[in-house]
Image (cartoon, helix red, strand yellow):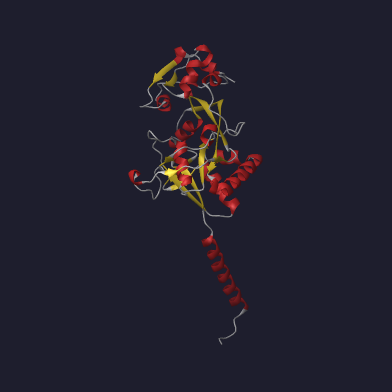
Length: 312
């Protein structure tokens, strides 16, 4: 038998033992796996190989709620003829690659019974696309929404003015990208009030924001996320975000298939609490997101052009 230990020695031994036990217990806890789009700034993106953005902040809170470590799985989608974002996300979840997926538009048609199978999009560890199996799709379910989608008006600093309605843009050179939701709204607005102010642009080539920065346009009606991504890439940009917001009636949330129901319930608890406490607005501001509170109902149908053309 060895010499008796001092009190300090015993305390150190017990401390080391507790660390070993704690590490062993942590190692046995399965991480919460959350799929996020890898190039969807500022909601989710990779910076120096690390996932960042509002979606990641919310996912961290969900993992903490469940007492589990978080594993973020970035994916990159390239839609093909037989594929849509909803089907690719469903394939990721149905294949068990992740329990939750973030940044999902909560549209009614995507929560109907799925038909057929789909391949997963590119993600870490994925085989080449042709070698990936087709996954039998399962029923998707939504969490509570954490953000509403909106169009915003952005101005060149030299053309800055208060904008409460689209009619306040009269007389400015407004970028009009053919075939987009923004274009339809601008063309239909008040029976064509702004048609003579629109500068037509193709979908490919320089963006509205690039042409505004170059002084070739004065104004643009763009998705809030598009402007936020621009600001992240161009922190010294002189473009001005106005107070105009056009809600689209579409919310973003997390989704899961049946085996992820526990994680989905935790997501809804976290989101409800963060909305009530104002934490979501704070997280969004810290991540550079032009945040808008979710609109009712949580899950909606896509708005019609007639509804969008009405200026609230």
